[in-house]
Structures are given as structure tokens and as C-alpha cells.
Amino acid sequence: MKIALDISSAARRQSTGVAMYIRRMVAAFARGGQGHDFALVTRASRLKNLLHLSPPPAENFSNKLVIEGLHPFFARSTDIFHGLDSRLPGNWMKAKTVVTIHDVFSALQSTEFATPEFRAMKRKRYQELMQRADRIVCVSHCVKRDVLETLKPDPAKLRVVHEAGGDGFSRRSPDEIAAVRKKYGLERPYFVFVGSINKRKNVPALVEAFSLANKGKGEFDFAIAGRIGFGGEQIREAIAKTGLGDAVKLLGYIPDSDVPALYSGAHALLFATLYEGFGIPAIEAMACGCAVIGATVGSLPEIIGDAGVLADPTSVYSIAACIEKLMCDSALHASCRERGLQRAQHFSWDKAARSCLAIYSELI
Image (cartoon, rainbow, N blue to C red; front, side):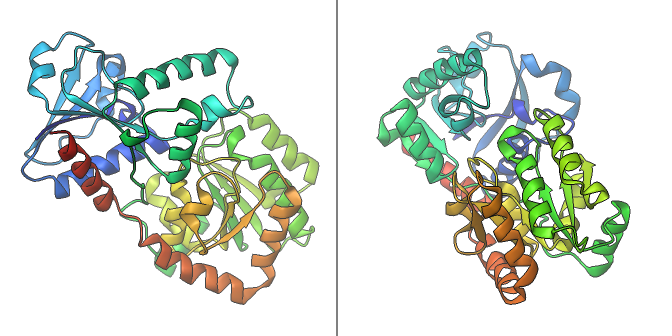
């Protein structure tokens, strides 16, 4: 097959969740897609970011810059076009089309995380995708339910293909853990949050819950790793209100190379967010032997299973109770770490790539 993959959203200096998804899928296709030709497509609107593109990962891959509507030969010589970030080209594209949907909750199902204008624009785009796409890949059964409920596409088009953690995520050596803890000033045992920090990630409530569980004893720190976006002032206000001082450490964006050791050294990942379409940090933390506190909503019950503890993200008392359990119950903590290692093995980018290739084959 001649397969075009839209990688435009991976053309960034710092990795978002979608950018990591795209890069890891491309790497998995390179490992398991022999016999097919892949074009890695970047839309011209991302021209300024071309310097951040990686070279083709194998001989059967090529990079292609696409200007909307101006590639008639490419449009007719491609068998499959896969929009890896909820986008498809115009009707000029003659190939069979596949689109990945990561999350419709934030834009369509909640009034808290987007303006009415943004939601209206997104709804129109998603409805067009539901009509035009030959197959719709959802990254979890949770997202599939949301898509069916919100957009009402033909159910026969939908397929669930789970994401996974990064290939380099595994338990790190004591020396690597010590080096990262020293780098970020993590002298005491610590809980950690990793991800883009915005309102949906519920970080102010996590700070408040951590304060309740820690009860001012100063036995643990809470390290928050990620770029602060919408809701940043609320986080700082929450820290000031609790009086935790330097027990909460805002690490900012940290390089990918430091994240496995940061997880490996943590007492637990605190990830009781208001919604996740998949929740890659939960998988990556479990793969590093880190206990996980997730949420009872979104995809996290599906992804974590019985390998962690789940809190109601709308209740700081529920989150605090889960934190306290992992602080005080050493047997539960050890069990979560062991079960998490086993659970993480169920998710694989190679498996995701094989599933997508099978979907493409349905259309040829």
C-alpha cells in the first residue's frame, strides 16, 4: 500500500501528547511496515516548524510538504491517507481516508474548557470528519463512546486502537534516579504529576488534596512537571492558599530523557484529572514501576484497570484519601507498583501500528 501519514502536529520543538503519539506511531510503522510505502505529510501551514521534523526513519519513508489542493498526482497515487490528529485534506484527496480522534470531550462535551466559538468550529470540523472518513480510529473505548454520543457517526466506521507509553520507559537504575532527583531538588519522597498543565488536568485540586493528605508533616513533596498553560494562576493561588511552600515544586517543562527516572524515583503519579482520552502518563509511570492514582472518569479506569487506585477528580477529599492510602499502606503501594508493571505490558505501539495496517487493508 501507498500510505500517507499527516504528521503536521509533530512539527514542534516541545512534544505535546499528540506530537508524541505521531512520532511513536511513525517509529512503529518503520519497524513493522515493510512492504508498504509511507509519505510523511506536513501541511504548508506548519512550514515554520519544518526544522523540527525528524528525518525519514526507513528507506520506504519520504517527507512531503502538501499545499491544500495543489497536489493532483499525489492525490491519485496514494491508497490511504491517515490524519493522525483529527484532520483530513479537502475532497481533492482521492485516497481512502482514516482519521484518529484523540478526544472530543474538551471541545464538544464540556462548557468549561473552550469558548462557544471554539466549540462551534470544532463541532463543524468533527461532523465533516464523521461524514468523509472511511474509518475513524478512537484511542480508547471511552473516546469511542463519546464520539458515538456526541457526533452520531456510522458505528461501522469506528475502530479502537489503544496508544502506549514511550519505548524508553522502564525502571531506571538507582544512579539515574539519584541524578534526576538532585537536578530537580527532590530530596524528600515525592508524588509527581507529568503533563501539559491546563484546567482539564485538575492540578489546583491535586495541590489541595496533597495538602490535606500530607497534613503539614513535610514527609513528602509534590513535583509538578509540565508547561503551565490555561489555569496557571489558579495553581499558584492553590499553593499559596495551602501554605505548602517549597513542598510543591513547579519543575516546568522537562526533557523527555529525564521523565523515566523522574517516574522511577516517585512514590506515585498523581493523575486524578477531569478527563483523559487515553492517558499516556499513566502507562509510562506504570512501566517505570511507579504507583498511579488515576480518576474514576474518562479513559483512566479503562487504561489503569485494577493496577492503581482511582479517585473522584471532583472531590479533593476523595483524591486526598487515595494519596493517604499510598502514603500509609506499604502493601497496597507495593501491589500497585507490581500490578502496574504487568498492566503496562498490555499496551504497545507495535500492536497499534499492526492494528492500523489491518484497518487500511479493510479499505483496499
